[in-house]
Length: 233
Image (cartoon, rainbow, N blue to C red; front, side, top):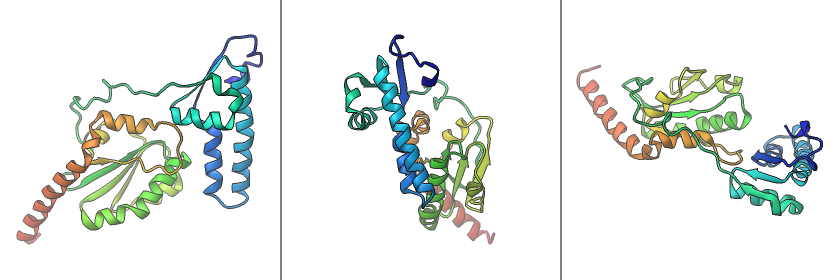
């Protein structure tokens, strides 16, 4: 929105950058080959110039964490005195674990869930990496594990992950049941800035207890597996 305030020097203005977006584009450059690496690096340089200009003309600028503030201060030392942190939050009541929500999962699986817009490249990179590097090891130890990727507009690379051990839901009416009944919620982002709201939402549902829930679920499903084998099924 800063483009719509060309006369910020005369109008007292507070700017919430949230993240240092230019740093994200520079991260993109390290993850791609030329020519995209050059393009993303160039975008990062141009965006940093814009961020510095906006911060210099604003009365005060905010980022979501002190780490983001420090990163921006190092890149724009002339603005250091007008930069502060203003953290994100989520609706604790809406994402409370006290709501009675029906489980979207099957009884014979241990659900691990990722939530987020699945056409956003950092999220795409996260789930593709997790599916390839982590999930096979988990399923080797816990065969009942199934990875749910919950989010709108899945990229073709995300859609291609759909398999026996991976469910790609696309848009859902309510993400809370997926969080509330998951054994574990993951956010394996390798490229990210600031605070991930998906982590705050999962914390609201007690996902930090996921390791214990995974062990309990595994014991429960192991018992079921023995019963099935004993019955010849």
